[in-house]
Length: 161
Image 1 (tube, one colour):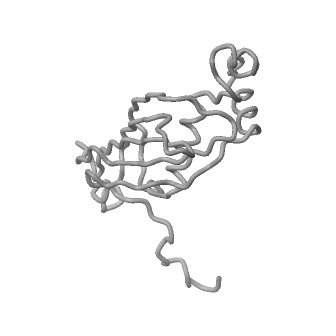
Image 2 (tube, helix red, strand yellow):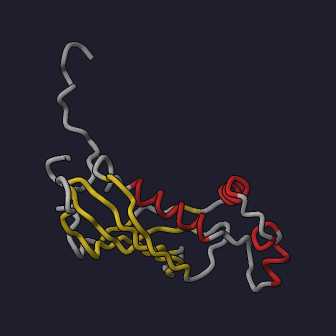
Image 3 (tube, rainbow, N blue to C red):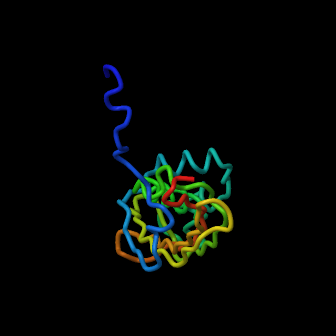
């Protein structure tokens, strides 16, 4: 770039402010298939050395078919899908709290996506920020709910504080 051209350009990606995250707003993320590589990397990195995950015969004896994905990995990939929508790009300030419910098993090869619904949105007590709670429903390729989590986040307001 020459001179000052472009330095005042508006960002192409901008997250929503808390005021834009109104109760009832619903959106869907992209989808992602969980691979064997994802599974091995996660359980190795995080120390999930439980036979339920490492030993397919053990998992089968517990009533599961396929390589069982830890709920923590399902959550992590789901949260990544939410982040990839850019809804929080440069507006997210803090992850404050979360409730999580695992509803059914996810196995290697399943494809997940997330439906996000804003269920609470209010001004925070300080600065120009708000507290936003969403209900994030993770669906598999059959449209079945596999995990639901409700994060509470601190989000910037219109002034950018």
